[in-house]
Image (cartoon, rainbow, N blue to C red; front, top):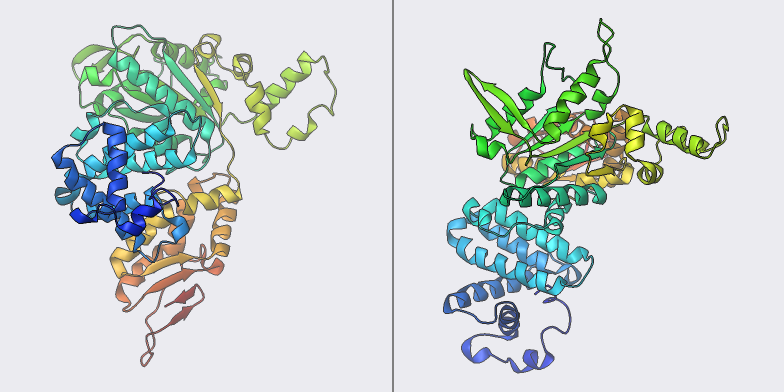
Length: 499
């Protein structure tokens, strides 16, 4: 099916003779049935209804003048299928479930033996998105455990780049699911460390993972975590949050996933009035939880033990300055102490490839991580710092991107179409880079730009298109009603054109 729009997959003689037309079926129908038989071996009478529907989706794509011939693909069929499910899952749900299962099986069959194929990955990710968004959750839970490549295909729809980090997390989540499904088998605790600057996608990866797992997940900033003997927030509070996410069910909480952000802050000294490094104590106390143990918790008057041995822990942080530790380690190993020129290009900004190649447990210990904790890290991944082009792609490419969300909101409130010029997108990216917070700044810049437009647009009649240019970014200029006697065909402001 993945090749149905490609030339040669519908035999020329079928096109000319109309083979199969005697039963109202044509070459497209025959092709689909052949693919179905290749996957299933046989078909049932109930399948014919769904196959006819799939053929109809194909014809709708072919007759849609908005889709250029070169852009027609199985993804286009999935778009049409999603449109129907948006209208009614009750009407189209059963047929959609069959079609998604068939297309998934057929795509996987054709991808067998290939080490990497972006086309197949995008299709599988799209299938997963539609299934989880529109079909009952009971059907999803009954499916076979998602493989790492399938999880990554889902993440690729929403997150630009960071392939290494996505692979590491997907592999860890898959291993975690295996650990949960086989409690009789002893597994080593799985701890993943993500290193990357603010706004590079560490948290977003985990947010999207939460959408495709049934396990409870908590996100916590551990920079303010204190040792148990001091006042404040302790490791037990993190587990209580997980317990709450699990609906107060101990067995469910024990298979949870914990994402600890700002973990690098715990590696820096925090000296108390008594001269004690409190962060060293925190690391020691966290270690008992991370390595897998029973931790005593108190929920009101109730006390109970929570086993952490089957939990997945993901640690994350910016680790600013860790390149200097690597540089010093390299100099020491090469016996080049005092050579100012050695590795000098790395002084201004951390070099991604250099850090990836040289990060190890020894470097992490020099940065401040306890030896026992460093030794238990199953995976260490360094994420890329986002550049201008990355931020522009984040604005426009992912499914459910920020701009797409604002487009939907404006469409619902005023039926107007929202567009951004290329110069406007570049200006947004440049402003985000200036903040130093990466993709996190995009939301605030867009919100400031559009807040007054979203306020005014519902009161303006016949507002068909709003084009945001470079001058509009961050200005928050209000729309105004057209002057009396205007033809209603155009509305000009310093933002751009409103047609």
